[in-house]
Each structure stands twice: as structure tokens, then as C-alpha cells.
Length: 250
Image (cartoon, rainbow, N blue to C red; front, side):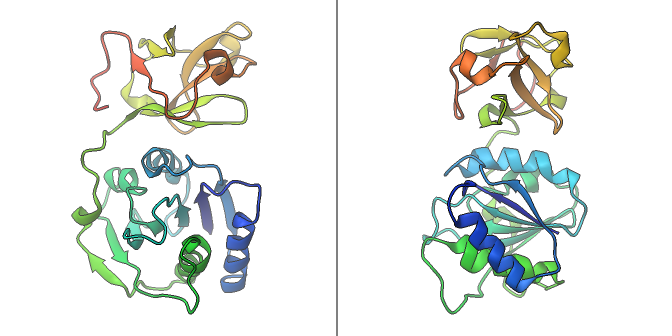
């Protein structure tokens, strides 16, 4: 399968144009819409979101990932193989957390192939989609394989203490893995101290809390309410822990 992870948005033609290329190049391969609303123009926040979701997909899955504010510039187009999964997209840090949490030795290639017509502003359609389709058909990368350390963002923290995504319910995902935070920890968001809860129903209606979401991230929510509206927060806003803070690299 090919999994789409982009910041293109569902409104407008962009996702549809990418899917049209995938259908033309790989008509029998299933295409899964994972995110079309990844953090816009923000490869770093998107990297933490992507890493939380890849583990649900089997080896051999091809992730077509485009959060690419530097499109047409000096960043390289790349292919990554990590834990048997393939990732196609820009070399701008988007795959840093996938690489970091990879259990095996990852490999990456600079994509040197170019189509006859390559838009300076839509590599997702013109370059990355055809390559993703080829990989889904067992294409072996023939571009330049380079040392993995050349694309690392080692200064980025293991867990990002900020809001990286807001879902349709108004819940706010952070870039912090719940597995590194004790359930006794208090999370401070917009000046409010939030306790952990396992389920929404254990909290009074409109009550705020944090929990371990279905994909392993610390998420802020309100029972039957929109936490982001109650708190007045948005993606990019930071969160912190009440003392004593967890011993994690954030």
C-alpha cells in the first residue's frame, strides 16, 4: 500500500492530483489517506506525528510524505528505508524521528531521477508520487546512497514539548510519547494544571485532562468539549510539566 502524509489539506486539488499520478503509475496498489493536514510548513512537528503512526503499518508499506516548505530549493529529494518500510519525500528533517526510532540500520538515497516536466512548486505530484508508485512495484532505488548521518537532526529532542496537531474533536496532540511520562505527572497547558485520566468518561463533562492517546502520544482533551477552545491554544504552543518533571529529553 501507499500511505499519504501531507500538509496539502483536503480542500483544493492537491491530494487529488497526487492520487491521480499514483493511480496512473500503480493502479492496483491501495492508497491510504493518513494525514492531509499535517503541521503546515513544519517538518519538525510533522516528524514527531509521523513517527507515532508508522508502527501500525506492515513492512513493505510505502509512505509518501510531503511537508516541504523548501520545495524547489536546496533540500534533497530522498528515499528512506527504515524497519522495512519505505519513505519518499524531502530531506528536511521530516524523517528524523522515524530514523531515530528505527530498530535496524536505516538506508537513504538521494533521488536523482527527474521527470520530463518538473514543477518547481509541486514535487509531491511530479517527483515523489511517481517514485512512491515505483517502489510499491518492487522498484530498487538506483539513486545515490549516502551516509545516514548526513541527514540527521541530532539536536532535536527525543520528545517535543509542544502541541503538534489538533484533531476534529479539538483534542491537542503533543510530540511527547506517553510511555516516557508517569501517570502521576501533571501537565501544564496555558497555565492550567492537567491531571492524567485513562478514559474520557472518568472526567466530568467539559473537564480537562491529559491521556495516552491511541497512538502513544500525550494528548490534551476535554470530556465532550473542545480542549483547544477552552484553553485557547493552537499548534506550536508549548507545554510543560509541573515539578518534578519527567526525566526525558525535551
